[in-house]
Image 1 (cartoon, helix red, strand yellow):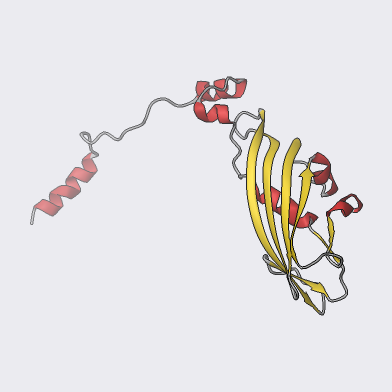
Image 2 (cartoon, one colour):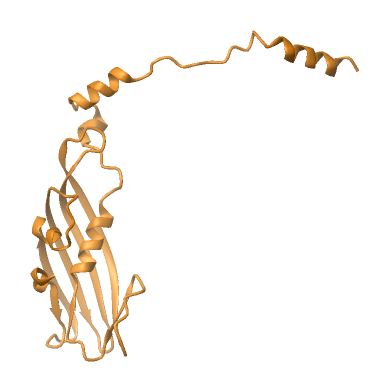
Length: 178
């Protein structure tokens, strides 16, 4: 995590009010977290830092693209992502990040590292099923799609209502003999 010092926000010298921090996220950011699902990334992260007398409000906003393989064809493509997260930072006797939207820092803290929150926001903004846009609109040409179409079962199996098992017919006769 030594590579992530640029994500430390020193709040001691900041005046009360709103401050904007901008970060450009690329593949090296994810390498620090040992995350290798993205081939490349081009994401802009904006953090609006509102300093108040007893607490801080952080509003994270990300937008950009991550280069990922398609789940159907395994073709690489740039997937656009957007996301936002609101975080309240308070002070207490010890560090506590158990709650998703509240971070408690010790009274002696002078900075907060926002890299973990940016990382989680980006990873959770990527959909679980990643489909190339050309697969959705039907213009994708790939070996995987050709093979899937070739192996597709075309005929639907239907149950014939006209022919019934003679054993069931005998049982139906028992119901009508009353």
